Length: 373
Image (cartoon, rainbow, N blue to C red):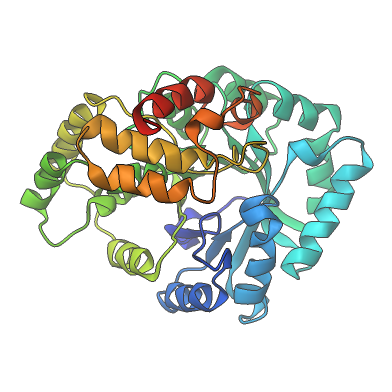
């Protein structure tokens, strides 16, 4: 069944970075955000088995499934390769997801985080592509695809071998179009040439493109003084043909309000505005930054309980401005409840799961030298 892009919401509500209160998901705030989102005529919710330590799918049930008619929204989730150790695990995880989310079917179901190595090999070993198509025949999956962090070569190989794939989710933002590892432009070109709908993840690069330096922000404000910096990143990907839905992991009602302001009555970038984005891209890339998107996949298995994305956020701030006391204060508050950068034992667990393929161990050494003085 072909996906009608004209009927898909341009803004998707990503449930990976939900607001928290006292160490748990802030259910009341999530409900308010869901209500604003649905009232705006938008209805695509994206979760996964691992988000929020397994609580995201449950929150989707409580904040969306129990409160809205099932046919009024789309729900997407993902099969995690790292949970599959034997053939029966595939069915077990899927049934657990149905129970967690409180649904009989998923509108969109993805193989999670395909890339070269363990994840892709696991999906092949356990015939997960065929398994998903069987669940689709049963009506338990309406549309089948995968999220992707691999090379253009692997993407073409998979699409050649699996023409049944209906959509692909990729990392896409103006900073990563020509990134040597992410290679968003090449991935986008491959999917566009095959007319495969694209779901965009990390359009604001984990918040990086919402927190640019003052001089870069001034470039945007000079053209649209009443619009946020983040809106430029979202409009960039929203202006690309073939984009089905753009996921935003909104953590506050303010972020929701700003995104709704961007997407309700969406305006594609003009040629002049594209030139401004090109200038901003060049300026941002001139400042070496750690390309962490704060997915936090590295955190769950860290034996030293280091909140790696938050450490890198402070380090990035200090790379831009070595005198930034806020970054140092933020780090000092962080390590009251988490490990220090210097606590890293170089076990490599984090590097094995990082979708951005960052040299985390090496970067924590740098962070320790800067922050643990």
